[in-house]
Amino acid sequence: MRFGILQFPGTWSDTDCHHAVSAVLGQEADYIWHKDTSLEGLDCVILPGGFSYGDYLRPGAMARLSPVMDALYAFAESGGTVIGICNGFQILCESGLLPGALRANRQLEYRCQWTNLSVERSDTRFSSTCKAGQVLQVPISHGEGNYYADAETLDMLEREGRVLFRYCDDSDGSARNIAGVINEAGNVLGMMPHPERCCEALLGGTDGALIFQSIVDSVSRT
Image 1: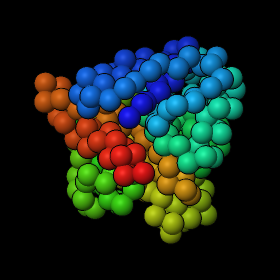
Image 2 (image 1 turned 180 degrees about the horizontal axis):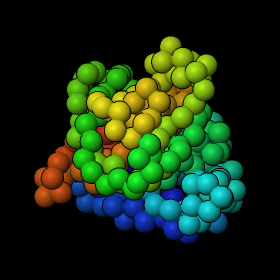
Image 3 (image 1 turned 60 degrees about the horizontal axis):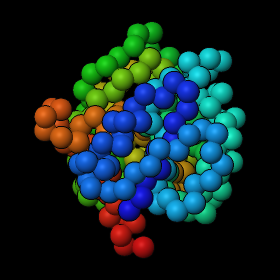
């Protein structure tokens, strides 16, 4: 399987994502610079965490205007697998590929800590190696990870089963404890926690590998 890892000015979890999918899972991975205009040959695109363009205006607001985004829209529209992590989730929301927005944490503090995530569904390309209701330990590392959407959008996400991961507590203030959502087609995931940082026991946990392995398995079945 071939992963493409997008790099924007200010991205800094790109090497972590590369290590997780290549060294840990044994897949191919290439870095894709934000000025590139082709995603040809990729099976999955990762938008990593970081502070793209210094988070000026709003996190992800400037990255969504990068040249590579037109290719990303086309890739997602064609059914390609996309996962946005932390700042990548913010970019997906700013670009309209996912609904909602990420606001400042309720405590107005940057938080870097382990969190417990409930897997809401196991029948997606991002969670097939998990069980519904399973609790994953995945760290967060953000200052603006408070998921927000209006009540109508939240009800729609719940009704359509598009909330994939949910915090087991309400520590950062996210609406309905939402930690990750998918698009209507189910091929685009945005999540604030960092699965790439918990793929090896040496790092304190391996639950993140379940998410990446689910992606690999989903492509091998197609």
